[in-house]
Image (cartoon, rainbow, N blue to C red):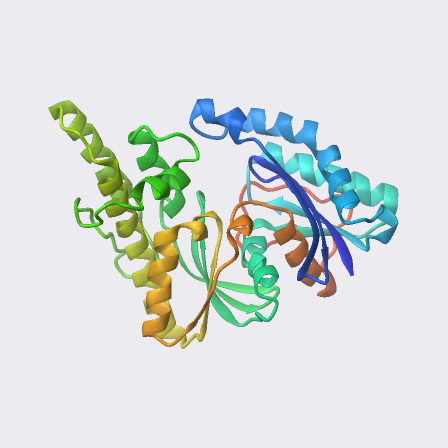
Length: 338
């Protein structure tokens, strides 16, 4: 079964053709990084305009690379939540028009579910149930994945996301966008014990996260150093800070494993590409005799292949939308109403 998938939740215009939820026949991404880098982050209005300019061509390229026509496709899957509302609307409305003109079923796909599903492409043998840590610029969740379409949140950030913390620290250090990626690169040869950062905990919620205090401590340390004329070793600072963020993620996942007895752990989201996170989770899973899965690097960021993967499982479960489908800036992974 071939699904044409569309993704436009932030600053990547993407389309893909995915077969049976596991095999990628094509995956095309039009990145907007160069357009946003001058602003130090994504500008929603610019993102929406660039999606509108790129989406038709990206979809055509995906079909051509897969050696398909629309007649070979059995359903159209599209990211409808969460994300930048203007950006999402471009993809949703294009998918609705394509569904109307072709008569193909329209499948709404939740963005975070898609990130988890990226692992089904990298690891065709992977099946639920498992625990997943979903970490990105806007989200930090520990999710109990009961089935391909059943999700339970057992831990989440109470304020900022892990990726946002890394981006904020990188910006304060003067590193270019995308901050988290560049911070990881700078930190590879740094000393993770050179700077001291707190490891915040949430009272009464052992598996929830709080990163706002950690982010503030980093920004304050940078500002204080500048005011005193002290030079910051970016490699050491980055290594110390990333280990503090990852330490919080690892500690709570360990609690989740102990509480649920999970035997499989899945990393997902843009921050799953972080080298320290992968290394620390490999150590954790060896210690606890748990299997670890994470997507190949090209599938960690936003892409349409992951939408096609999750879209397949949503479709066979009977999930379809009509032309009243809307986009939503926020939507819990365990609800995913439309």
